[in-house]
Image (cartoon, rainbow, N blue to C red):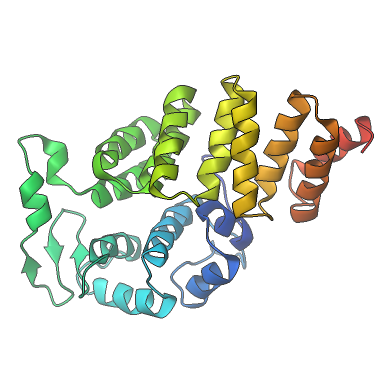
Length: 284
């Protein structure tokens, strides 16, 4: 996460893999099976909306689903939820189940043949409040759509409903939205919640490091960013952020090392020239 928040951000497949905390070869399997599609007219550039789908794929993959299994289940899900993205998000209801079940956008739980299922978990948690009429996965999907459209206030409300019993991805996205509104302490709490759910979530460690630095916790920033790089050594943004954090605490040898690593892994980014200038002015 750099200072400029990019609501219209696009990704290469490598950037998308880093953004979602997925190995590149795993993401490529999803692309090969057309579970993720590049932007029209592009070979390897993906819209922001694809990040939401990739996060769903990452959650299924972390739950032990292989790419062929996800593809088969996704095609079955589309028999009851024609929208491709909504069908994919609906498959989160299948995690931990022996059969494919799909959460439809209106909150129903159905089998691919159209048979409606009684949602014991949902019924047990129902109250008079409207948010309880949707599952965390439903609110997550609503939040992703709102965030992609730039409706950050709406995205925050949706993610907050989802986070009551949500996944690491929900907490992570909510943290990003809080950060975009300069609510840094709340953002840090959400990144920590994401890490609590998924300790190997490198992107959450990276963002936690950035927020800690902006809150004045310099040692905590360095610690979190080092953890992100332990998990994903080729994580370009974490190298950049750690270099900046080390420069702040006066460790210029360490900063130069990570600026050079950033250029190794992302030499053509729009920040690369800035990094080269930093190296040149600091004896790089």
